[in-house]
Amino acid sequence: MADSEQADLGEDRSLLLVDDDEPFLRRLARAMEKRGFEPELAGSVAAGRAIATARPPAYAVIDLRLEDGNGLDVVETLRERRPDSRIVVLTGYGAIATAVAAVKIGATDYLSKPADANDITNALLANGDALPPPPENPMSADRVRWEHIQRVYELCDRNVSETARRLNMHRRTLQRILAKRSPR
View 1 (cartoon, rainbow, N blue to C red):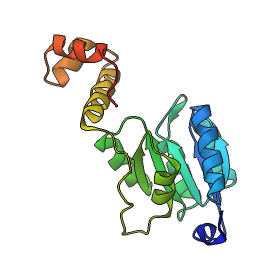
View 2 (view 1 turned 90 degrees about the horizontal axis):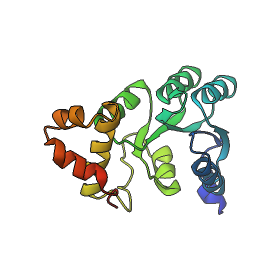
View 3 (view 1 turned 60 degrees about the horizontal axis):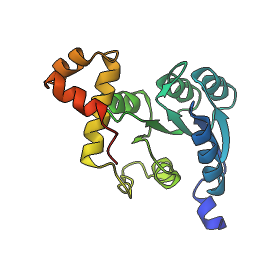
View 4 (view 1 turned 45 degrees about the vertical axis):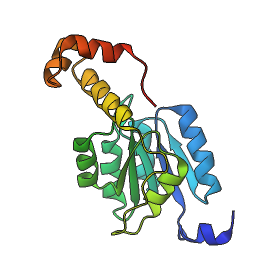
């Protein structure tokens, strides 16, 4: 990697990666290392908060939904310990309400999975007012719809009737959608 690309990071290249998907976490760590970051990995809210308290990094990429809680708890801890850190929140469920909550708590940006290392790097290094470029392969409209339906279904504890009522959709239509594979 060229020195000019790494120079954009500044002197402190510490990066906290928090995600409970271990293969994704390791892949992302390798990709971010190639871009000049010095990643430290955490697989849970507890581990992420411990690292954020002991060694608050300059950068962080935090998954929203973790097995032991909410990634926003790690964002809060990190924001208290190091107000200047640049934090990107990742989630498999792109919902406007959680994006707003993440930014209010102190996240710099919010990306939906699957986000690649280039999208994440652009978000971490984006100038305060400048918006990062749009993703190279955004989700299709069908995929966004499917993700939203899955999210509401999960929030309703997988109750089809309740999900259909909240989505203002016929129950049988919802059952057909849920039975299909996710669109690309």
